[in-house]
Length: 243
Image 1 (cartoon, rainbow, N blue to C red):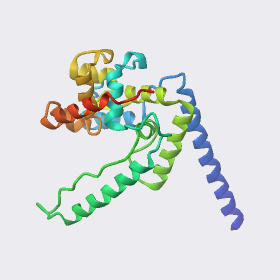
Image 2 (image 1 turned 90 degrees about the horizontal axis):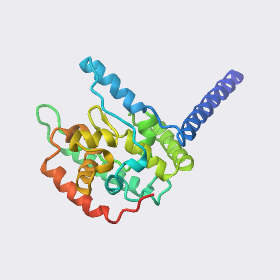
Image 3 (image 1 turned 45 degrees about the vertical axis):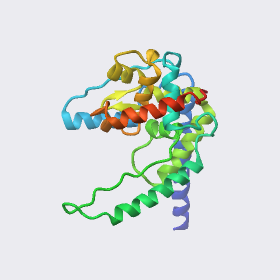
Image 4 (image 1 turned 30 degrees about the horizontal axis):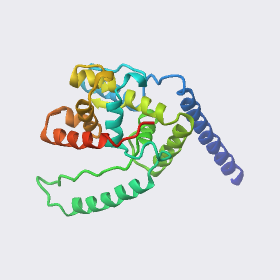
């Protein structure tokens, strides 16, 4: 019995190590080869096909030098102000997000029911740009400790093997900006009818606002919230350092 358990444990360890080696090899290859798709994109393709029987998709890779510096600064200002300084994970931000989520969950628990159910207040996250890229590239949307641990490993591998400039380039080319709209070039064309290289500071700040909830903001991209938030991001952009 014990021998069987040891064999099972050894097989599990080999499987885990092999998976990590596969991820590291994939990330190392990204130094020179642009990723064709991400796990999140493939799941979205399947969802669109399943729900609508067709796929409306817009994405075109452009090299980092063909993406406006205004957009780079806007995304960093909006999503990860410490991007150039941290090593992939900002523990203070995670702790603050956890504390906010605890308070938010307490509010959810106290809210009165309407129509048999309460409308929950949305929880917030503390993910860096590198963590978001790790999730989009390789992981599912489930929230478990094992998946979070895998996310941290992938984040450190991305930081160690690619560096900040390449991480930002891959992120901007693969992140979702609306239903079936992926990457800076597609977003610039979809919302502003220009190439990603020609985005000015106002248009760039507008696109950065959409990132946390692109499908929701896409329905009303000129709303008062989006406009006001874009003005805040535009003001912060002047202090952003690029990698």
